[in-house]
Image (cartoon, rainbow, N blue to C red; front, side, top):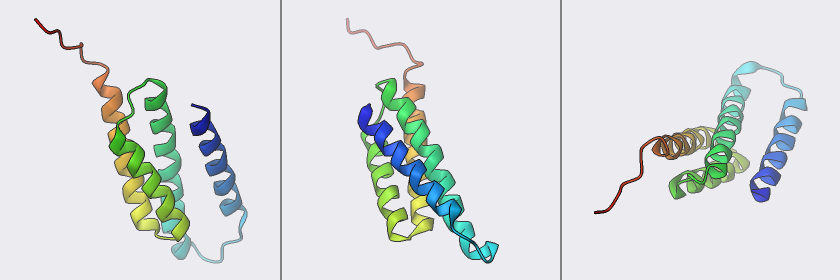
Length: 104
């Protein structure tokens, strides 16, 4: 849990640094902003799933890959993987709504 909070703090710090940079025009920065928003949304959902002990491995892997792609500057792929991580985390959370299977 502490690892996720540290990761979230670093991500928010990095996003704050990116937001503080001057931008000349809106079109080149748009993919970066979309990817940053997608990463932040996915991070919150993944942390909720981890807190509920419902985090799926594909969600964790997609989140790590999205962070790596964002740091490399591949913002389209980072957005795609962040959305995938969010979807997997939401599926894990929805799985908790079902009753547990009882063996006979």
